[in-house]
Image (tube, rainbow, N blue to C red; front, side, top):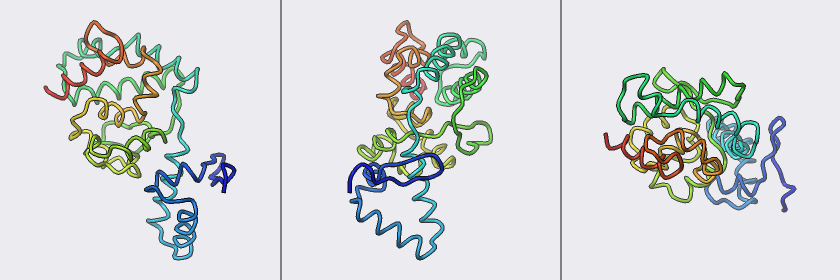
Length: 215
């Protein structure tokens, strides 16, 4: 089978080769056999996982869209984390970082940024749906993400739990934002929003997030 072998869900098409990786390195034939077995047995939970994987792998990075990137960069420059900390009177912490991202999300939406969200986390915030590239990263290095299964990256309860446990600053940012670091790094201005240092770039963001995790 070639790249034309796609699963279609609404207007979204997902290459079986990509989805195979998301489902644990299955071959395309193995995946098709598995999908037929799930449908034949009417196993709702397993079929839901398949559909979740399809959705994750079909979700593209916002940073491949110039208009979306522009909105994110505007918010990043106007409302950086350091400004938010000053306005709220809060110190750097893991909890503050998560609260700031909720603020950032709302401000982005006010400028017309639209993207799907996952369920409420701690009854206080929503997170954007994660992208396929992030799921692939999680499969390649599960320890960095405290073994949060890639298939559960849009599971609100599991994400909230792991956000309180993950020690790697890049992994925390990835799970929080729902984007692979490589994609976020396409926009130094966006990453600069998370920096509370003089370096408004990726390095400053990583250092600042590390300080939040150590507080």
